[in-house]
Image (cartoon, rainbow, N blue to C red; front, side, top):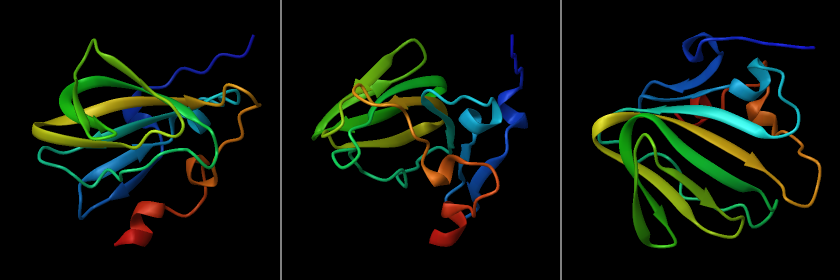
Length: 135
């Protein structure tokens, strides 16, 4: 039986100093192959999380606040994201996360309902940090 145990703060991360955001590479750090999984840290008053959908690749995502709180805007409708609340967003639906007075640590889990999961390059250890390239 393969087991990997790690603290969230021990994962390698892509960090963007200007925005204060970081993406902890949890999927690769735990050797998960069947679904996507990242931990995103956002500071208070952050709106840099990109609005996006997954209409091109068909991925659905689940968002869970581990600490702090935020709003997740889904196709123009705002929902509160806080510990104990999970949000599932389908592939073709636009979503954007913004924080208010609290920083946020959220877990995002993604996968495809109709095909085998293939991790995007930006979630792999050792690839260039996409957040640094935006600076």
